[in-house]
Image (cartoon, rainbow, N blue to C red; front, side, top):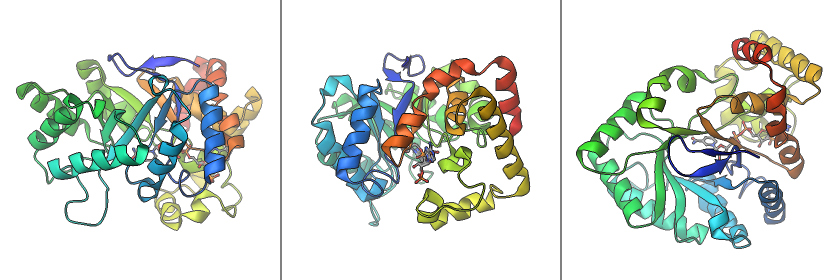
Length: 317
Ligand code: NDP
């Protein structure tokens, strides 16, 4: 396992990490979750990502129970604040919700601090000054060590840096975007100017496009799979043409390339993300220990991706 710096900053995180969306607190029970975390940590994963919104806080609560087994200094734990509830002040990036959100997350996680706290989405209704001051205060009061953004536009990230400079506040150091063979433009095009300029790192999500890149949906929707369990997500995928003939043929080609290399489609897809030097960590989502065992081998598969294969994969979708 390689440990990569988060952009230019000092923190080092494992090149693959463990996510908790739709799995912790919903799909996996406590015993299965504990096994997944144990396997992850014993394989060298040091970074675990969660959010206040995941399973309405239950993902954080379960993680909090499990984290008691580990030495705090050995782990990098992140959470994300934005969707905390239904009340008028329970969501978004107001000073009130950011502070109450992080306090509540820390209570559920049973931690004194997280290593990274992300603003889970941009909030156009809150002035950037308010967001940047509050994140600065969260960091200076020791509730988190670094702050980041998730799915902010390059323009919004630029603005946060400008405001942080003007107000002498700590800037965001990392962005958490979607990045996979299908959805890659934001990381590769839109963010291109900001890596060098601000030294931002990336912790990327949905490396398998919610499982689509494993090929599991080629013959329909398997019972109990993510798109079966979450019809809204199936609809999102449908709207993006994921089940159309063109994408289906490309996924079949991905399978041929994986077969030729003697690896699985999920390992190849994750390994492709790892080839991007701006990626600090690829966050894995797993619904079982078997999936984790398979997917974590992507760290070995990345060396099998020659320049020629990389080019073909990059131009496939
Ligand atoms: P993926 O795209 O890798 O999807 C994971 C899902 O794909 C699994 O739950 C499983 O679903 C299926 N899968 C994974 N491996 C295999 C395999 N080997 N064979 C068959 N099916 C497999 O990642 P996620 O979408 O879960 O994202 C990863 C993490 O990123 C999240 O847990 C979260 O921490 C973070 N995230 C952040 C977001 C943000 O806005 N910042 C948004 C989304 C995620 P199943 O078996 O149930 O079909």
